[in-house]
Amino acid sequence: MRTIELYHCERVGVLNYDKKEHVLINNRIGDLNIFFKDIFLNQEVTKTLHKELIDKIYKYIKSEKLVFDFKNELYQTISKLEKPILNKIFFELCFEEYRRKNFPSKPSRMKAIYLSETEEEVNMWIKRLKNIKGIFKFTFEDNESNIHFEADSNFFEKCKINDVDSIDIYAEEYWKGNSTSNPIKEILVVGKLRYSCISQ
Image (cartoon, rainbow, N blue to C red; front, side, top):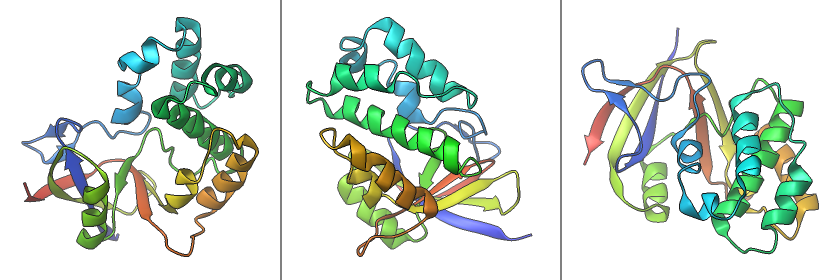
């Protein structure tokens, strides 16, 4: 059985580890990743979206059986607010809807940890992110219990709130694993991962 090694730039206080077993705790299949756990505590979200709409988002991302039937309602609510976090939530829900319909075997962006193939790629992400704690190496067995998928994040970054019709086009390219001319790779992984710290 092949063991895969990948890298991650850790932001302060984001991930939860079992330090005795050196296992990542909050990356079990079915768990939300930290971004989607935190949006329900984000004041910019809770003060802008009414509780019923927030509940719909929560229920949708927790259950693979539900459909994004409140898409128009959410779009009408956020489209004129110019709040990046609300736009990102909308894009994530659109990508998740496309994955569920067309690529259900791929790991959900909402439930995966985002890793890189090399330390060089991790350093690229460090330049883009804030509050970096250090670089970690993750290892996991390449089996059916550990789901992983390599994508080009440029397709997600192309999404614009004033061009909703193009989102499915970008989602198709993303979930097919296609690349742009200058790809920014991200490897989505859900499963049991062991870690070691490279630098802090």
